[in-house]
Length: 93
Image (cartoon, rainbow, N blue to C red; front, side, top):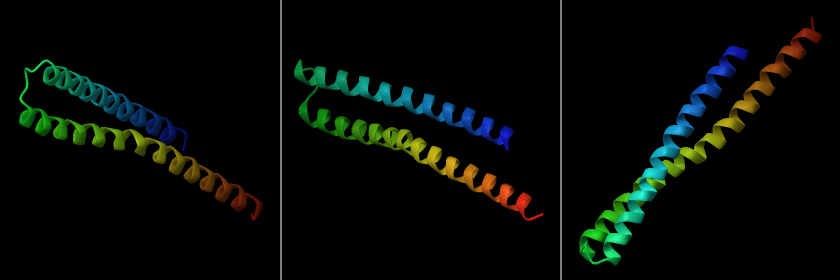
């Protein structure tokens, strides 16, 4: 169980790092897009289309980041259930 927990932590860390980097990259793209539109370098139709695409992308990465919290809570519950089962089994022997 300890090895499984260590794998879970490593996997979760990788997911967080990757999603965080992608989320930040998308935020930077949005910032540059807005600046380009403000400066008059990007026509409004292109700006709106690209902004919508980037906001969807950003939202997807945010969901991944939020799902890590859910994953942690599920893991804590699973470990608690396994340990409770093992303790009850030990007492009933």
